[in-house]
Length: 367
Image 1 (cartoon, rainbow, N blue to C red):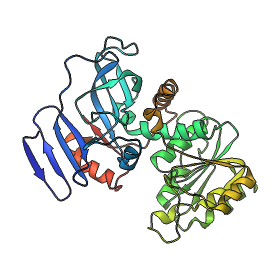
Image 2: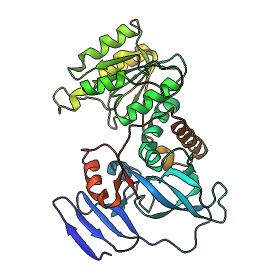
Image 3: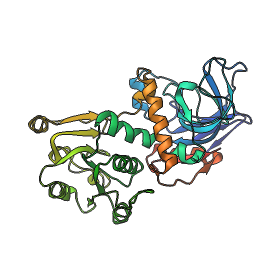
Image 4: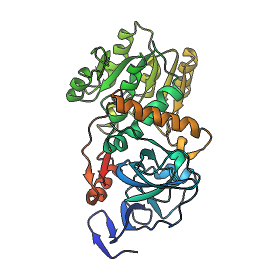
């Protein structure tokens, strides 16, 4: 399986001399294994063989994999990919060799995106615009998909709505802000540091009238108590139509990072009548008083899980339409992700360790 092993404090890394791919091991905590992966000579009817140019790294949700029944000793690492088509199966109709493509590997994919060449079903890929770089596409696709799912699929955003985005300086928050402003939504957001506050206040669109993207930036680094009065002041006491959070603080005494998150009661309080709250908190539970407040406002709440797009084929056509819309908006400059410095493949194991430990939220590997 491997020609030699290199040991350090956190990882056992097995390296092969041929086609390399990266996997997370269940057997050894925080272990990444790199080993030989061979591809079949005959390509499946609906498969596309892609030479990977860039791969995005995000934390593995092992609990989610277990919940959906995916149990393996090795879990592929890196699922957001951008590359060039080398070969197509007999029944592939969407692509041809030399097309530039981008997509997200499904949850049950047997191969890692951190590989020179991979085989992927054509229904998980879309054409990549020529002006959009592979690094930018692979690095921002996941966050842009989350933002699109939150605003369109869950919140049914429309022109004239008011939106509160928590932690607008994050990759996900920035995508939400830009997508909402494109559709004529009035946006408020929170900042977690003075540097983020300045950055958010200076956000401008790349085209059109150069008005600020954010109507009001609310600082919460001195304490989240400023959130409710600031939102009510800006909305004339009515509250906002939509809230998209980046996590929820469940207890009063938590880590310093968690203290920047809003309490669930504060989020419900800033919602207007008929408002909608989209939460990224996986295990959120509402107490009876919180449910009562939602009822009084005729408001609703939904959980954001973008993985449903690749976990089920029920709305595959809609999913591909969303991906195509995202990459076109990124190419046109409507969605401008924060620049990410691409790292070489030999640094992938170290970077993935930081990502999995949540020391780094996102990384992009250039192959």
